[in-house]
Image (cartoon, rainbow, N blue to C red; front, side):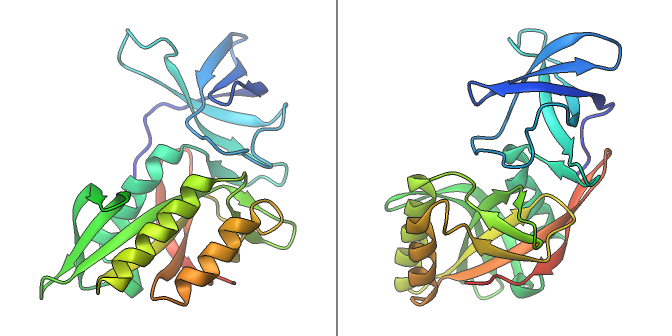
Length: 233
């Protein structure tokens, strides 16, 4: 996925009200950027971090700047834009880059199911459906384990329950973790942050839901999913 160009770099002053961030651009401007991430952004929103913003073409936007990337203290680029994760997954699936889901093609996004919506609907040559819920991951602990969620999320647990119902009905159901940084070696549920999610994930995996994790290559120009990670539960 190509990112909007050019990205403009600056220094994070603060993130606040969850969806806003003040950034000092390199030319000296202080701007307020939209933060497209509902999570806690652990390790990705520390004041003083180098960040990159895109600027909207639409002149009517209240906040024309959008926060796209940050650089951790160890120099790792992280894609913090949660809204890009579904597109990244769609591209990876369409290109056949997800080994476990080869033979399926993505056919629809935001699919209505009995108890909500699921991000992607896939289909194989025999017409069998595969439902995929995509979760964006930006947090990695000191041991290189990507963790999800980084804040308590009852919504994320509800998505797992919806996948379990789809699996029980005879469909293939997958939770796909999109890790938008290159330093993760594995993925695990963040039990210390949201123990309910961890318990729910383990339970639905026992009832037919499949968990996959893909690590992204992140640059200032593009982000793409390229490497499968083990999911440790």
